[in-house]
Length: 109
Image (cartoon, rainbow, N blue to C red):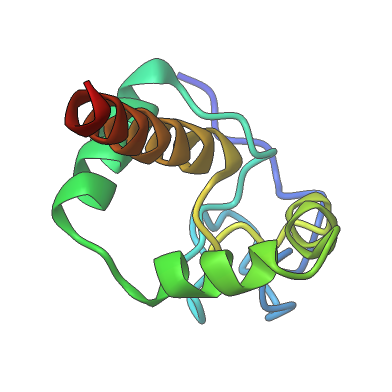
C-alpha cells in the first residue's frame, strides 16, 4: 500500500487554518479535507443525521438563503462545514414542500 500524497493546499478551505502535511481533517474546525465530492453512503448518513438532528448549520443555511448567491459563493470557496450541503438541502426542502402541499390539498378536498 502506498503512502497518501501530500496535501497540495496547506490551509483549510473552510477556516484557513494551516493543515499538517497528511491531514484528512482540519484540526481547527473539523472539516474533511476533500474536493467536495461525497459518496452515496456519506450522503445517506448525512441525510439521517439532518433528519434526526438539527444544529446551527441548518439555521445558518436558512439565513444564507435570504441573501442571493451567499451559499453558492461560500460553497465554491470551500466553506462546506459552515452550511448544510447543497444536495441535502435540496432533498430536505423538497420533502418539506411536498408535505405542505399534500397537507393543503387533503384539507381542501
